[in-house]
Image (cartoon, rainbow, N blue to C red; front, side, top):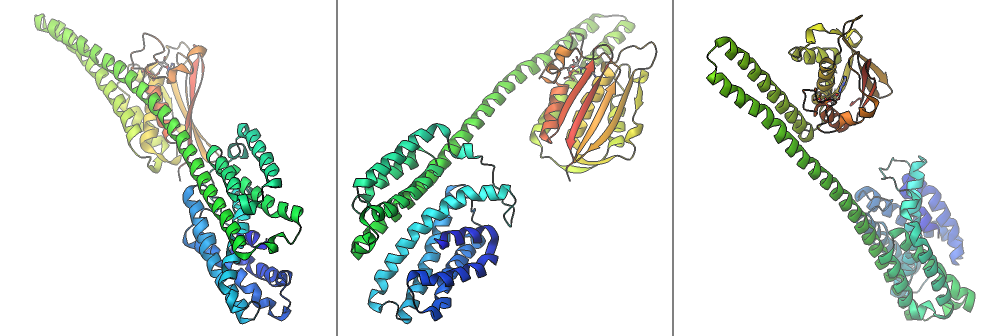
Length: 502
Ligand code: ADP
């Protein structure tokens, strides 16, 4: 029993536990009936070697994931954590026993096989559930030496509740069976139970089932037939039983892990499919609406060109040319928005230092063509000296859309000029950029819709209705959020919250 615990302890806390483990192994040598107490320090060595070697091979060399999250980790534990170290440990231990005349050389091979299989069963059946259930718990409580990146695994997801009654029935059935089907003869029946659990249920159920079978098959016979039960079995029979149970544990363990992995990837596939379906629908809508929005100004340009051709007066021609120019600018704006959308989807996030004031100045100077720009007062004074580490492309897309809306949706004022005020606030590792205007404001029922694709607040809006949709997409791409607060007729406040990328 100390060996499975020793394994878990060294996996959790490293080789610093070896001296304590060695002391324990030395002192418990007496429990195995070894009366030559002066040799106990020697007998404690192979076991300590096993634990240390297993840690070195599985955790250090193979980078083993000790919380057994997938089939690869499970196989690695089996091979490098248990089988290879145990084969070596038993070789050293049995050789030592022969040299010290604890066993006769004639029994070397028999003892080697018998103790290897016996130890394998108990180590395997105890270590796996301890590692699987306790490692995430200890990691959550910060009780491990290194921080493992354990994907969160709440117990409710580990043990599926609806399968619990079925599992309990199997527990009781196994208990009943163990009363009249001795394991030594009918281990394959137990194996069938275990495999049923592995195929039907999750990995967690199967490792509990295996531990339960171990307790039933070792405890039950002892309770029923008395302590001498195991020693009464002939060696060859005992080895058969051990081999049977070892195979039972290993196969159901691996099958359970594979089934769990399979269920996990199925769930992931389903989620990915749903995402794809959603993106596909969005793309369809996008193509439909975009082609509509592209063809309208083109048609009007074509109409205007035809009228201009027939128009003899130069002043009227000029008037039509101005109208054509407006349509072309609208088209250009729309195509730029589509390009922004595609850049946001396509390009990797790239963090760089950005001077917020400089960026806003640059954006505003590019927006000076918008009607009413000259009437506005821009208040950026609070941004002086604010430097942030952020993805510049995304921040520019976001600010460009919100600032251009602030200019477009200004309201003629009696008492004060239309204004746009931008301030920034640091909050823990987040940065808030707050953009306030005293424009038209947004009706309460429209406040969430304005972020939808192609949503325009009114038919008089000359934009595409894509701006805020793209802004929100860009914010999400860098792990940020955009919120709006507005009073209809008074003005709006947009809050951009972005994590600082360092
Ligand atoms: P567009 O500006 O092309 O119409 P947006 O997605 O940028 O599309 O905005 C959607 C709608 O949200 C706008 O049509 C407008 O009704 C409303 N809106 C956005 N910003 C403001 C603002 N600052 N003030 C008033 N209304 C706004």
